[in-house]
Amino acid sequence: MGRSTETFSKKEREKKKAIKQRDKKEKSEDRKNNSDKGKTLDDMMAYIDENGNITSTPPDPTKKKKIISTDDIQISVPKQEDIVQDVIRNGTVTHFNDSKGYGFIRDHVTQDSVFVHINGLIDPVKENDKVTFETEQGQKGLNAIKVKLTAK
Image (tube, rainbow, N blue to C red):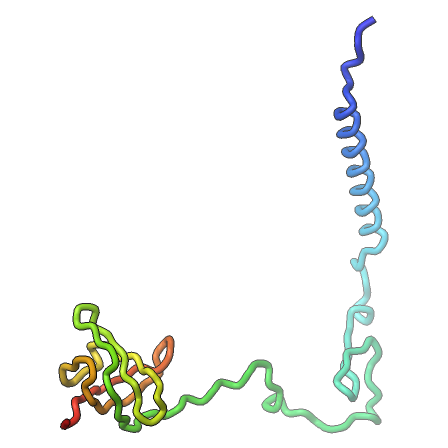
């Protein structure tokens, strides 16, 4: 007599496959039995009670508090107001690279480091120069514009 061609791993794979198919069939039957299709409009309707909670029953008109204006409803975060920064500031150029065309200015009042691009310069600058400048909001933070040398 010859050997059986079925190996242990082959039998295990077939068992797992049969279990998977059975589970899939059971889930499909479950979905069919618990389907939400064919519900009436009343079954699908949702209401908001006097406290703002969602319910399946219509609210009691005697408990109604007040009429809410659609202008009072905020769906998103309010936009942050732009900060007006047209104040002329004083500072010192801490770093400026002529070949790359940018550098940084240290503000004398806030001690913040402010980015400056060569397009924002009115006078040519180099490191340790005292300057006056205005700022504007850039993509990554404050940018110095209208940078002028001050008298030493």
